[in-house]
Length: 516
Image (cartoon, rainbow, N blue to C red):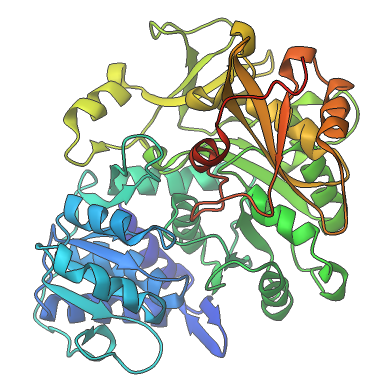
């Protein structure tokens, strides 16, 4: 099976279902399938061929959804671009992928103009946005289609696209994902008790360049569910969309959930249609999860994975989201999804006993073929046939996986291993704290010390000393921050993750050892 099958099945068995509900548009799956074919023929008429890398720099929209199906139908490789990247990162990605085409909408015209001359492989910049096509670009929407092109059925190991990581270590790397990878993960999403049903109304609120959204859209299409779109995240616009389209399911990162449940207008909108909020991409502090469950009054599920795994590896189901005292799995990442194996290993890649900490590794049909033009890094990441995630974790006796930290984010004061999500969860429990992140900073006495970088709720206040004492009342001494930095906002990447690499650059100077 392949990605193309997902839409063929939807058009055949759910042809009259609404595929796209956006603004005044309602498009059935049968109509959407025709639109996809016409788009593929238009791109073929412009010279696009099988194997061409096609970069997409667009906001969430029905047109983006179309490209996720029309490009694989043509056999071209989609290269989704993080919309929050600097022009230099975008230029790097286009050059690294040898992109022949770049497709943009009205929001990214300036970026396209800035980088065009710096990408020698780029043949054409295509416009697929709202309004008239700007001068110098080719309007993809109005090109006459090539009626003669014959679409070849892809092999399951043919690549669908290059999906670039955020580049926090060593620059962006293009994960090569095949039809088998993406289709397998879409099916995996449907195997647990799933919210992806024909009657599901799903809102693309997380960015569509991200693998979490891509995995969901394929599974949703398989079931004949409907797609709505939020061009870019804004908590009030999200609430308006839920009310307007009667959204039943959405995927958000914890930062988005935090902004949503703390928004002053939350009570003014009818969110009663919302049945499921899925979250992932970064740790969810338990105080935030508790608040979200109490305020939104819907089911929650968590997915753990990464780009290289198409992206899902484990899931924490709604029935595991229990807040009763003593139920610890609510703080876990759940259990491996069917069809995917997960192990925790030591430095020699030997599986460790239950309860012991090690690196999380994953094996299954969803795991990437490797990194584009990075054979050495690919061999290291995929050694022994297992994807080495760089995440530290452990299994409990019931098979729940606990993600403790990224290897690079772990702090070691006095040689002790401290996992930042545990500390961040305690810091976020203080009523004055809106967001928090923990980093390690050099310390002359302990080698490394813990620093909390925090933003406050509107009108709230807390001193550095008060916050440190708050943590000391709830954590072992060596796990507590010894310094606190207050900032208006915490820097975030395109997916909403807090960028700890930026925090380390800004606030990673030697510790003052405010507390000893």
